[in-house]
Amino acid sequence: MIQESQLDPSQAVLRQTVLAGDYYIHVVKRGQTIRILDLEGNQAADTLFYNADDPAERYSAIDTIREQGNIYLTAGSKLLSTQCNEMLEIVADTCGRHDTLGGACATESNTVRYALEKKCMHACRDSWMLAVAEHEEFGIGKRDITHNINFFMNVPVTPEGQLTFEDGISDAGKYVEMKALMNVIVLISNCPQLNNPCNAYNPTPIEVLVWD
Amino acid sequence: MSRITKNPREVLYQDTIPGGAHWSMQLRQGSLLRLVDDEGGANVGMLLFNPIDHLERYNAPDTLKCQHTFRLGKGHCLYSDMGRIFCSITDDSVGWHDTVGGNSNRQSVRKKWGEHNYQQYRNDWYLNGHDSFLVEMAKYGMNQRDMAANLNFFSKVEVDEVGNMHFVENNSEAGDFIELRFEMDTLVVFHTCPHPMNPAAEYPKKPVTYQLMEAAKPAKDDLCRNSREENQRGFKNTELYNLGSNCR
Image (cartoon, rainbow over all chains, first blue to last red; front, side, top):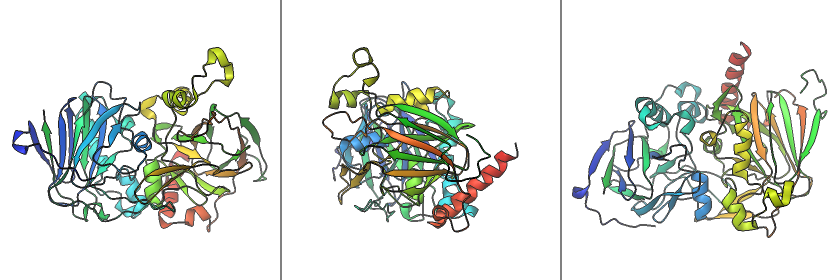
């Protein structure tokens, strides 16, 4: 569902560009709004959320889609935790559909998906590993890295049970915006994947904006 | 289980888990686990871990995207997050098993089927999938941080053109089965609690029989290995792991 935001970027309390292949980790407080902006189009932002007050509680893709009865995320979707608490709500979305089934790329799964020789190519999980290694203060590690959201990514499922990866439906300037319903750690890998149309084989920057 | 058995189809061990219960076991590379839906309408929630490194666990997204599938059945492989195959589905009479519906929890079971606590109902109480996993996982030092999207064998959740999810009733009949051949040593945690989307009026208590056998070594033309090029590479990764772990 396309829902535009009324928020003014010049009023944001934080604006940060995240380059392709980099990570972003930051706490968004309850009541704040976070926007992820696809600056150049067709990018994938692999995102995880944790309860900042107890990181053992985290975003749960399967609980979120089951409780809303639909596998795609868009405006109105409430992102649930592993304890089925509401973490964030998508309040604006100019892309219209986001994936939460496909997971993130990792060097190991790249070997399976593309070729054994591709194991040394940069991958989302490596960005997350570096993020948790450089930010021990958040108390998260590989144990806590699970099933994420792929903002701006298009992974249709057919009624026959096939999973397909299609060209992105995002474009330059499209965004998704969420209101935090608890204090959350936001962990994003701006996807460096070069083997897959999820980012048009050309990873590009995103911008993260936060409003009070 | 014994490693000296020569007859691959001989059942080495058999047991029945009542509906709404949980259990766990470690299976070696080369073992075959056959799950049988005794009465029809069963659900087996399952998680898989590397027994010597619990950080390596079943990864539903990788399993789906490596095989471009939303359903699981004969010929599919169940992947870890490390690009390796815990087990292959070598046989299956159902055709569609779920791995996106997740787990029931205390609140959802109470809301749907009412409070059936231990104090009043003893071992006929209504257990839920989430707590069942927590109990079994804690036996190995794991907690909710080690949880992941689980398998739901015998259950089917389909998706329509606009992405709406539908639980399909009567997906599995009495006597239906699935066989898992383990390609590496694996810690198996499972429960027989109802699928969280099951709309049954009464809490379904559906027993499941499991049998352990010794698997025949995958041949060159093995169905699971050759069902996709991705799985050939998954098998190679798993062989490399087994080569290393057997050098210990």
